[in-house]
Length: 192
Ligand SMILES: [Ca+2]
Image (cartoon, rainbow, N blue to C red):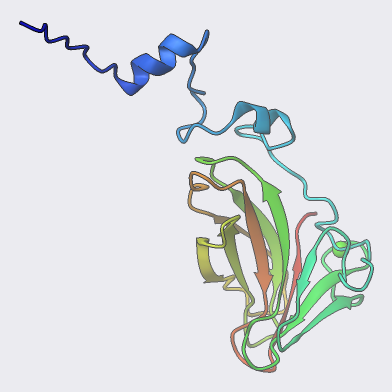
């Protein structure tokens, strides 16, 4: 009689442990981001980033209007404001040109599972407030379009928190967006 041989199939975890000299799961990263990528410049847990040119003091190559920011003028306008500023001599002025799709954005490299919280000084035009929004590197919302709530002429510091960075994505795009009504405008500065 021909013998019937049966070899139990190893579990996925057992196969990993059998082939790798070391298996680890970064305890600070629920989604298991690549540690190599974190070493290569991605923000570490609990760290605070002062975004380069967050205060809009350095002009860009026109475009972009500001160094280290990307313009998305849409149907409106992105302007270097030199009178209405929170600090220094410049802020960004965003004017709705009809469809409310005018914004500048910053890119923050950060691994999956991490939560991005950002603070920004906001000023309205006396009638309308600007908006903020967050996207992951796959283009999905990690912060839905949100009003700053600052309609007035006094600068106010507001803080917003995005949903955790999804698995398979590598960063957050933080958008500073014009007011939602045509003709209205707002101002932003990201530090001081
Ligand atoms: Ca400034």
